[in-house]
View 1: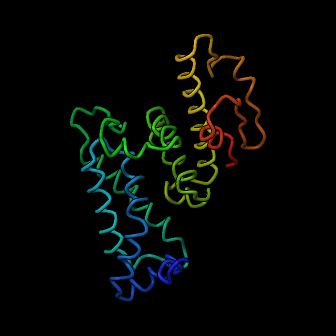
View 2 (view 1 turned 45 degrees about the vertical axis):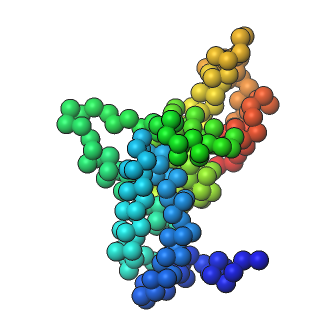
View 3 (view 1 turned 180 degrees about the horizontal axis):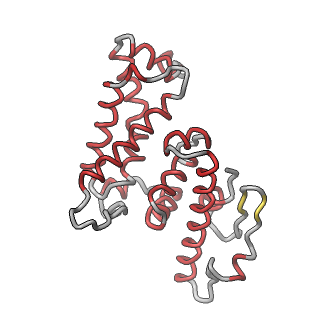
Length: 226
């Protein structure tokens, strides 16, 4: 049975924190610190950077708490801050030569390996390797955080239509990457880029149907409604 603290809405806790209750803000940190860390860690090779950006996110949230509108979603507001902190860190670390900053998570890192225990996280690892960061963030917020299109649009500072396009492209590209992997593992496999495979896609609104041979986590993500 949930405790009284657990049943209190995030927005109510934020309002009480605005009034000076440090314990209520600490409860919000407790609720979101792992979720924010998982989101941030996808943008950095270095675990220390991810930890620092996570901490910076909560420090910034506390310092700017009076700007939060308690009639809106606290989670969305917090993820907006986290994404901005990621962008700021990458800009500050951008090489003078103008080289692209690597976006892949170091999968040899123990923390990264720990986060891949379940089949869904194997899928996320593939997504992180194969998708541009913006596409990956849209996919993560939609399926890992279960945010609405409207909330994702606010976090990414895009229109709702743009978010739907990002999700469609991300899922299509991920599907091709998954099949490419399977084709490399199995002789005689069919590539997602081939006409034969593309013919198995059935577009209905924003739904994509998948071949049955995909594992369950992949099928759930790639065939879900936007």
